Amino acid sequence: MTKKTKNSLVLLALGASLLSSCGKGFLEKEPSQIFSPGQIQKAAEWNDQVGVGYLNAVIATFYEPNQSQDGDHNDFAQKALDINTDLLSGDMEMPTTSRGWFKDAASLQINTTNSNTNSQIWNFSYRTVRAANSFFQGLGSDKELSSTISKANKAAWGQAKVLRAAALLNLAHVYAQPYSATTKSQRVLPLYTLERSLDAASGLATLEEVYTLILEDLVAGRKALQEAGDPARSNKSKVDGTVATGFLARAYLDLGRYQEAYDEAKKVIDAGQYPLIPASEIDATGFRDVNTSEFIWGVDITKETTGGLQSFWGHMDIYTYSYAWAGDAKVINQLLQEQIPSYDVRAKWFDNRGYPTGKFYSTTKPKLGADRQWLNDIIFMRTAELYLIASEAAARKGDASAAKTVLKALLKERTEPAKLAAAEDHIDQLTDAQLLDEIYYQWRIELWGEGFALQVLKRFQKNQIRTTRSAQLTNQTIPYTDPRLTLSIPQSELSNNTKARQ
Image (cartoon, rainbow, N blue to C red):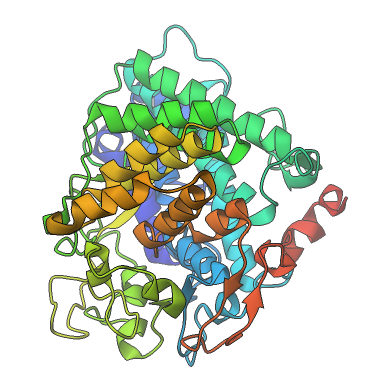
């Protein structure tokens, strides 16, 4: 970890309030770079809102670069994982891989135990788990809270529960097969809680045990946030009840608990707090401002938090000084792009080479490579995902009418107004099987480049054809069951945790 990253985590974790009330000792960190429970407890004696400050360090694990190795330009936490998994799916392709970054994902070579990218994904996810657990221990428990805890610390505890669940969802999606009656008993991951310490070797938990903890964390986290009054967020990097509900919808869909997935997704949709980007603006946002109405959870990137070239924008946007501008672009699968009807306003997201010139772009557009500030924001959750979860869940539980209603509500803001009636009529005429195929297509287009394509591919059990746009595996058909699409536990974990070799 770089000196810059270490220092920023210290400042993020303590915050201005702690700096004014705590001694110099509170700025010292353990060798792991995560504050120890003792430090949290001691700081809490000085300030009952210590959890609010420490929580920022947990959140930072989702976007800080260099969490595994200095100078690795495909190591920037969640958004790097999103790019990797979209490349694995084949919905995202790379016409050239001359600089090497993300080449392993494009060539399906990150599933090996000694892959650096594999280790990066593992490390940042378990770093979140460790940071959350250290925080829970400092406050006394990851299962229940003291009746005397302040509302601020209760809300922070709730956020940490949601963040631990989010990290475990990441791990389940890439290190395990999709949840089913067959796979739920497979031993897939070490599961670390206060009862199962990260500092002690842990055997592998079953996929069912992993999802049980995910649901427990999300339900308890949301409840704690609600009991604390679900305080208004100072910025969207904080987690609130809506973010928790969004993750619950994701998890229930994974588990095939479709009614619950539908209900949770509809809570977000019906609340109306984060309305869909309207059709008239869909190609005008650049997906660069976290304050855009539809964006539920994300990070406002500043000069202090930017990863610079080592970032999502440093790889995806040709209007930023980036690898995309310099040649190693990430483009949409040609066959997928050809499916987009001309009246779909999302067709404007891509140029004729498949570059996402209308989806991800900085304020310097149309001047290529001009943005050298790398201050565009990053997005982790938005409302369109909840529409797709609700539509898919309704279709899978046999309620085609509800599925179509939700899907048409999404398409209302993704279709040219003059063609909307025809698009809605098309949806109304779909058979049950055709409806699921339509929902699969909508997932792939709507959330392209946002990290959902691999889990969607596996959930819908589809094969994928690499097109001539791909420098790797050109024209090859990759089945959803291909073992290269599921990562193996990294060698570093196998070496340090003998029980993980089971």
